[in-house]
Length: 267
Image 1 (cartoon, rainbow, N blue to C red):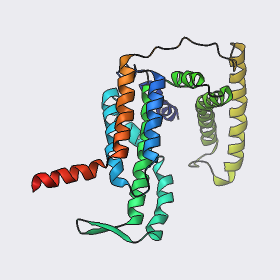
Image 2 (image 1 turned 45 degrees about the vertical axis):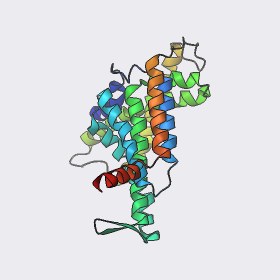
Image 3 (image 1 turned 90 degrees about the vertical axis):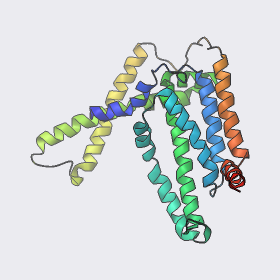
Image 4 (image 1 turned 90 degrees about the horizontal axis):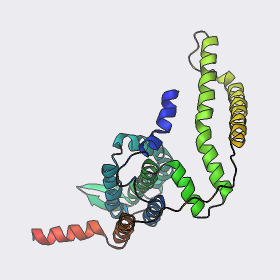
């Protein structure tokens, strides 16, 4: 279970790096990520080819920041089942052939399914990369500077810090259950209801003690204003490249343009 908690905060450990992306202004990174997400979401469900150039952004940023590909793939795979269930129905509802590639007919439903998977993967990757190059405290401070209501930021911070408390209490209860369960493998289904109830009570009690300790140390919803971090040249260059590239990929069909250029060269 401790290994799982370590995996949970593996992105936060990466955020303490010192690459060029790590040193960028957190507000600039948030704006660039938001612009990238809006641009990706703006495509329709048959624009699989138009979305392929957007893979350039996560590929370059992962290489620049030294983010392990395996880690991001594992995190992205968690979101894929949801879009798979949402897109599988299109295979049956849209069975008309859209095009034939290498002698294989591709239906509109299959293209929309691939588009949904690619669009979801791009959005999740962009958010994960932002978390991997920006410490969580900087993200929350930047949200305050954007005048986001403090209650929402506090809920986000508490939820983020509460997860390991829940996992720790669950690990203790599983260990105790296993030691008293003899040869039982795992938790019996008949005990699952009471186990979940006691887990909630134990974790809520511990979370309340943690919150009281935070208040004793001066925690409050009102945070003193911090000194604003100045923008530098590299921040403007990064924002221009990301937003300009996303806008270019949105307005110009890059795969069609490259295909036409290669066709003319071949002729």
